[in-house]
Length: 449
Image (cartoon, rainbow, N blue to C red; front, side, top):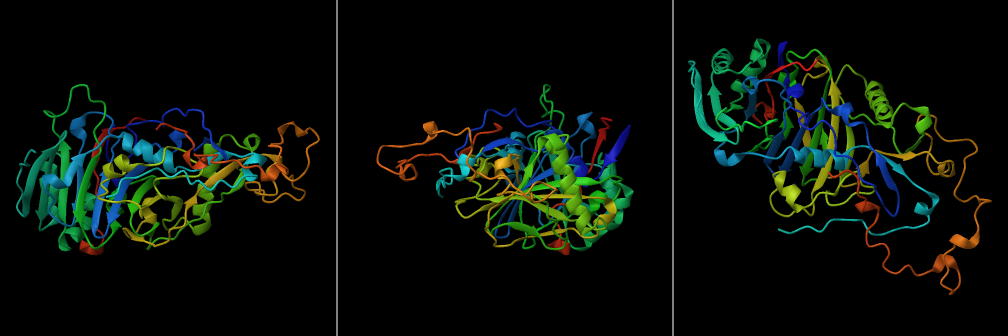
């Protein structure tokens, strides 16, 4: 079966089906155990966004299955882009960000709470084509170039019908239902970035298409998603990885949903941590109301550190690959997660820097009876007669007491230990119209189902 994919269903990290296998994790204050099942969100669209003043960089990955000639991408943009504004990047970039910021299950022992390690685990940072044919009246090719395996054109149009004709003539499968929304962007003065695969530039051994990254300037910070729901039938997941210079990135025109976290997860009570988290995520959306899209803040942190780490902290090389320019010492990395049906999106997403620099993560603690006075049980809440690390254990003896012969063991000088904290735990290797950052992504693929 051949079908046209809506916006958020056609771009995802699907080119890499799962995170790299985790290595043994170690940390001085907690050990990373795992995150939600990789397959749980492998149909989610994952978009990387950097925002510095009025400059926006989008990185889009695709999950094309089938003939590459079926691939097509159309993105409304606020200005005419040049070849210098567009490049391809490695798909592993998405893997790195996903592993670093995903909700996490952590194992703690009483010893973890006996020490207050001050090291944050921060990573040191450095300062500092082919032209389209098939002309249609009312459509102008403003620019034409190639990048990687893509032929790219920048279009302007006066009527959506003319634009649809041009796109159809040139092999872009655009739903007719998108015409009315396309006209809104045209009336607002948008241009259209259109890309398709250049067969002569695609290596024969290629098994995936490279993610595309494009940069533009716009005073409005937004992600149009309505066009992507024009012919959608099912719910869509969207995960945004955002690097911004104004604290946590939030969405102003849709409500925030709060997921229960900071609780004890009992492995015996649930099928898996992934299934458990998805249930908590759905409940959070239900509590807000499913008639309108809502968003969850899954992570917000200094990109060079984490505590505990579910993946490698980001470094200068990775951050520059995201499209960040210059020093990133004051940047905040934010992960936002949305899930919505076509009827729940009546406006494009409007994002903003909140100037909130608090560090947030969705963390769950592997159940240990001794931690019941520190964390409630997930779903069940606080235990009436909780266990505690303060309770003496009959099996304990003095063999484990640290004593340097200088008196109270609690006053032992630990020197510079540890140089690395739980913040460096090793786990997976790892506008116009007011809303014209990203809108229509169209592709045809053979269904994998």
